[in-house]
Image (tube, rainbow, N blue to C red; front, top):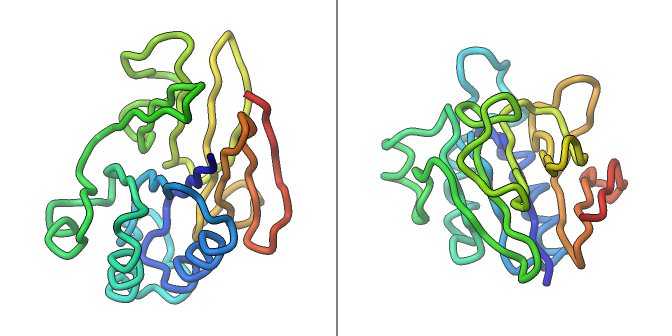
Amino acid sequence: MKFMFASDIHGSAYYCRKLLEAMEKEQPKKLLLLGDILYHGPRNDLPKEYAPKEVIAMLNGVKDKLLAIRGNCDTEVDQMVLNFPVLADYAWFTDGTHTFYLSHGHVYHEGNLPPMQEDEIFVYGHTHVLRAEKKDGRVYLNPGSVSLPKEGNIPTYAVLKDGVFTIKGFDGTVVKELAL
């Protein structure tokens, strides 16, 4: 089974289209959105083709394939226009082998882990910096940012298949990989 992860679209119609094109190519069971879907927030520049209404239409069109959690830029107003739940602060899911704790990363992060068991894998966004590593007996995964990457990274998403977390650019380039 294959899953996709993405974070920090920030209202970019351009990068939302890229993400949905990747989703069509990857054919995941679910796309897990780690927050900051529609708005850029006061600390970020406007992303390429900032058009939240277009992002709304695109994501509502694939609502049955989405599992989303709330980012620090997501609000109740967003839920009024999105036809899938977006206000959960966290979620768990399993690929049948591993259990994943999903959080945006603004409340729970490496320095403030959520209440999770040691064998659960922590997946978050928020930092706009991709990550896939094992540290101190834990696994930390961040797909990076779809539209506003930081620290010299390219726009990315991630795929989980057969116990391997792969972070990819929209051109298909494998940026980082970690066997869980």
